[in-house]
Length: 501
Ligand code: ADP
Image (cartoon, rainbow, N blue to C red; front, side, top):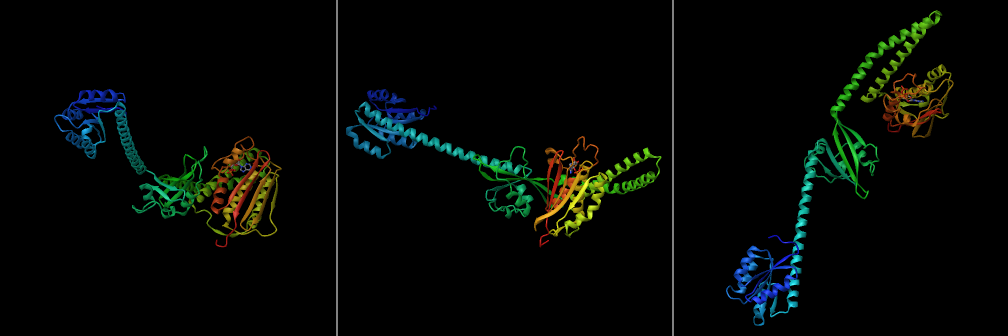
């Protein structure tokens, strides 16, 4: 029968009935259930049916010898506490039975208090044993849960289609699934625990993981990512998330690899397609544009055809816009495929700006704008770049300045250097300017501000993304300061040619 935690069943085996009832009366007040037997045999029978904790055993009884009963109890029920009840005459026997493993003894006749004390001591021992057993069971259960949890996590980790790698604060690899091992081309049994560089050959990726901010990402902040090109056909998008403990401490980084090869291949196909179409469109459009220009020129001499002239001029303008779009698309696809602007050499930015100046003056004059180019007296540090790429950067910025500045406005281009490390070029205007939302987005492809002032100005929204792409390739940067209604200033920084380039 199941018993509650604190309930202890007690068996009194004594041939004297008054002793049995006395024991029952006294110790049932201590919260024990008492069973009684007049001899050893019937005592042992009760024990077969009840979960007995303490046995009060008289050694001198008719029938089965008390010592034998004690021996049998010991053999069958190791945890049962046997307390010997004995007359003075048999004290030696009592001592002997203690040697045999009895827990305690109580001489006959006994005082109620004496019996209570002995019982309480035995009860405490039983509670203690039960508590120890309970704790032990709990501990082994926790350990079992832990190991199940661990293997469950491991199984889930292995079932993920993505590569997962976790580093600790020292950037040592502490966890990695098979997908990660496969894509990093590691031998199957390479143990974890080494530094990240022991497993990842791509230096850029190691750098990326080491530079993950050691704090929780802000809401809306994007998880840092890195594109890993393994070979011609294998691309992975790697995302790295800091692991922050409950106390806010940085614990390491969880890195997830997603295979984006198919998306990349599709994207490359798309870029190739755009490049091909743009290429095919460029020459016919240029021919149409040239021929229209010739017709418009002829009409200039003929004063009768004012209306036709306007229509044709608009058509010519539209064709010009299409040519710009096609050229921008071509520039973009060249940049994407990495074949753009590979003719790099040492060049002086001030010479380049000077040679482009004439074109810009003409553009500005068409809108009666004031154009100024300010170059330093001392030569600037040389930069190592493709001149067509830099031309594209400055042409885009200056033609934007002209486009987005009203007539009679002012355009200013200035170049200088603050150290031998880089060259700075600022393209400034006092035109429409941009609000903060536009300033954040103008480097996105096809983004254009559409308001009352800009609505009728032609453009593709590709110029600034191209500028940014070229500068990123060169290791440079671009910054914008702008205020609506006041104007804009784009500041470009280009690293100077280093001795090793
Ligand atoms: P496009 O000029 O072909 O539209 P860009 O990428 O060169 O494309 O520019 C994107 C948008 O940024 C423009 O549509 C314009 O709204 C804004 N912008 C660029 N330069 C300036 C500038 N100097 N002043 C005001 N707005 C500008």
